[in-house]
Image (cartoon, rainbow, N blue to C red; front, side):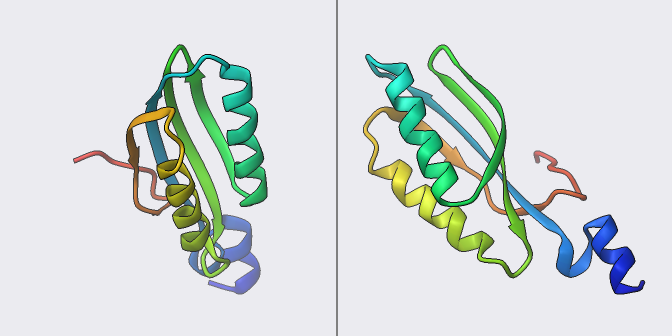
Length: 105
């Protein structure tokens, strides 16, 4: 497959790597918690989609294309989350290719 087509289809060296994040949270000021979280996500240049509501978080992050520091960004978020006392029962999944989807065992 030619490089131009691989880029258009996001495959090979252009694959978009993602990971899942789930957690519960407890806090008095949900807006402040969300702002701190969003600032960190922006700082790490991650994209995310999902749900953040009533003490529960279920997000899918896009960490970037293969070879662009995607594992470093994921690890930085993991370390930052560990330092935040508001988050409980945190699960951060391994990287997977967004084209392949995510299948639970």
